[in-house]
Amino acid sequence: MTSSTKARLEVRPAKAADARGIVALISRVYPGFEPYSLGMIRGQINNFPAGQFVAVYDGTVVGYCASSRIDEAVAFGPHDWEQISGNGFGSRHDPTGDWLYGYEMAVDPKQQGLRIGKRLYEARRALAEELELKGIMFGGRMPGFARARRNGVSAEEYVLGVASGKIKDPVIGFQLANGFEPHGVLPRYLPEDRKSAGFAARMVWRNPYVDPDEPVAFRVPRGIESVRLATVQFQARAVKDFAEFVASVEYFVDVASDYRSDFVVFPELFSLSLLSFETETLSPMQAIDRLTAHREPLVAELSRMALRYNINIIGGSHPTRIEDGEIQNVAYVCLRDGSVHAQEKIHPTPNERYWWNIKGGTSIDTIQTDCGPIGVLICYDSEFPELARRLVDEGARIIFVPFCTDSRQGYLRVRYCCQARAIENQCFVVMSGNVGNLPNVDNMDIQYAQSCILTPCDFPFARDGIAAEASENVETLTISDVNLADLTWARAEGTVRNLADRRFDLYQIDWTRGPQADVPHPEARPMGTKAPGGG
Image (cartoon, rainbow, N blue to C red; front, side, top):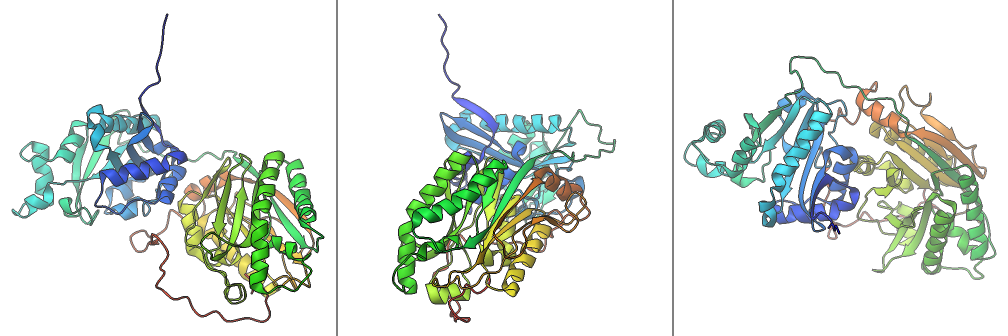
């Protein structure tokens, strides 16, 4: 008779589902440092899935290391941690890079007897050998240096002293024991690392299976990673009850599913048709309360459709009063695995603030789907480039933009900004808008839309950067296949490489950890009647 038990310790590539455990681990290991956000960890994993490893012991994450492929000139040039890590998102990853650069290593201090650090280094080394990279490099902490510096020891002298055995440093000593050699120092690498006085030792391991003198040219294969996108240009119509509205939505979900679409997106405020069967004139606050009552049944129906029709649904947006009493404009994303996600509109328009008292949300993150991470920007949010960049740093390759605009000028503001987001982030952007009118419903007097699927402007993509677009102001469904692998190729080998060519040494986006409640918002002023204000 034989028996077996499940392995208690496992070292494997990290998954998006590990993000919370990784954040908790790093908070334990480095209590004095600003913690990672969940979005940063997801970005590291999404941007280079093969380069991130976790050690899991009895179901708990007890070790983590993060890496990117980096070009030799960048890796051996002057840099700091923010630059080389893409501000912590791993977005500096270069698929054609010839070095593996490690920018995070954390081991639970309570589990150090399990040789977790050594196991993680071995996983990195195996990856470098598999990819035939020149080697591994990182900026290593030197926690004994701040004390030695007070005695007149320079950073270079300190590292050489540790390498020769004259000075003891637990971190550099461990790295030396694992086959790494010092290659100078990096000043101001991590200013908050006070024990290292902000310095880091540039540590290098060279792959013995690669000739360092032989030129290496890595190419990104033009593979196929096809995703089918459907955007609904939705007719605002009066309905007699909730069931009739659901039936009009389900029609398009059914058709998109028949065409084997992976995603279908509806417009911003498409659910305002639910106010058309009210028998009395409603004030803006009364209208919000009625819409709030429809929220749970609407989300339940969208989730039912996603499961039944095997399609991911971006459910436009729905104004609602949330649990804390604030009024938000929320996109509900119902995936075909049964999960439901919510993304608040970050920037309400002046009219939304004035007439509806809608407040801006405080967070934006990617949503993990079976086709990879995606992002949602509701209408006006697409006009703020920082938001799209945040989503792409977290790994999004498709951004969905439900919109509601009353005039051609308003529509073109959103359209031009969405095209810019596709170019500057080398991603796909899908727009979905309303057409028609609801004369008795505020915000839906007139609508203008030309829904479309936008691409970067480079050789692998459509000539005009438009994969598909609807005719203006008619109800229709527009479908197109896009190849996500084309984005990977363009980012590495395209005519221009907007993401890779960012000047990380000059600027970065610094995200706050929460809303700034004491900062007053500009006073809202009405722009015409109770129209949405055009994106």
